[in-house]
Length: 294
Image 1 (tube, rainbow, N blue to C red):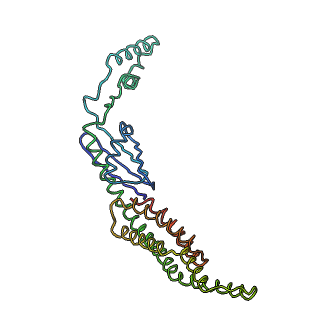
Image 2 (image 1 turned 180 degrees about the horizontal axis):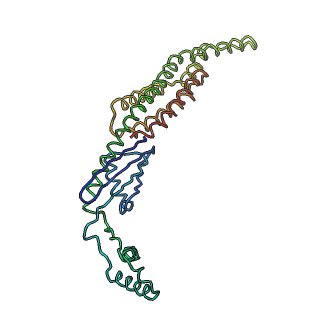
Image 3 (image 1 turned 90 degrees about the vertical axis):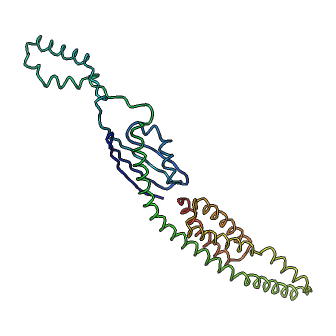
């Protein structure tokens, strides 16, 4: 499911901002962007994400605005002195001593190597990570709040599609006795025609045996029962909000698809095939939706 969450946290050491964006994915994939060194520590960020999210592609952006400390300021005074001496010498040689002023000194501070940036530690900043972790937790809670709203709408759609399958299955169940009656009548018509055309006698036992064989080949009672049971389980998972329901729903949709395929191939009736087509069309929509359910 899609969603967005952001949070801010401020301490004496840094001001931290975290944004999390999520899009649909059957699996969990986390990408980290932002201030160093966090893009190099996706594993640590993912551990926090897994407390809240199981499926989806998440982009986590971490911005840390660090406050400079006196210990972080380290001018290279030897290099600065050398630069200034060379500038003074150049001004004197050009007989332009007025150029050597305060702005020259300020410009020298920007020269390479005079005020080097303090190097960040190789690991996660121990004094900063708790702040980032707290902001990430809050952003993920907001993300899930948005995803829950989407989930409610998705659950309503899934229940509607489930009802469609139930209705079509009821129509199949109601039509099945007519399938047998129609086949028996067609057998009788053919027998009468054969007897009339060729004078062939057919015993009642042979006729009953033929109808019984057809009934055995086209018996879909087990498929109908299993499909109905899967539909009950599917509805129960949606209504109760079972933990990790996404995987279970995916499995049930797969099993319902198998039962629908068997039902359509065994029934051998045009009307049943039409209802099975509607069942499979609804199940395909369900399959696409449940891939995004946690």
